Image (cartoon, rainbow, N blue to C red):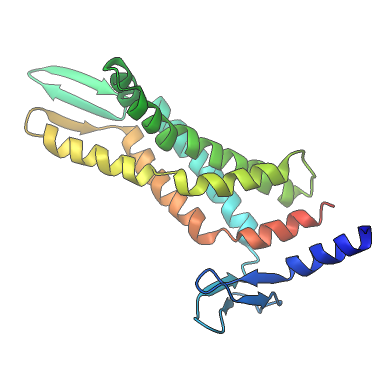
Length: 211
């Protein structure tokens, strides 16, 4: 029974299903910087990216730095009739909660701060261990969590909502962008770069070597 289970695991690890048509393909080694596409519909299956760990780790650390800056410094300042009001990233959540809008407040808090922080922290934890050759506890669970959270990190949607609000408030007060706004904008691009450079299949293969 044990041998048959190992054989089944080995077989499933060498097969990949096309996201477009569900056709199964056998995973084969690729030349550097090459791509494998579905033989039926041409959908991209996987790429050979030997630097995925280093690039994704560097981006994740950079993203954490930008996220910390975005939470420590003023986000926007409103100046009207000599009065200046500074807002931070958490201000929107606080105002929504004070207006008995707990649902939207929690949603803003999760998508703009907590989920990006958990995603980046989990990636740093897993990829740093891979790079240094360590076997840290719960590495597979945290990487699975990062993959689950990746679609829910909607920082670009939050930033778009902020820009719409700024356009509306510009007629009533002078808008002064703060350091946190530029850090958050940089965070949006960092998260987009992580989605572009990270190869989950290659990272899973490196974690399999822990066993």
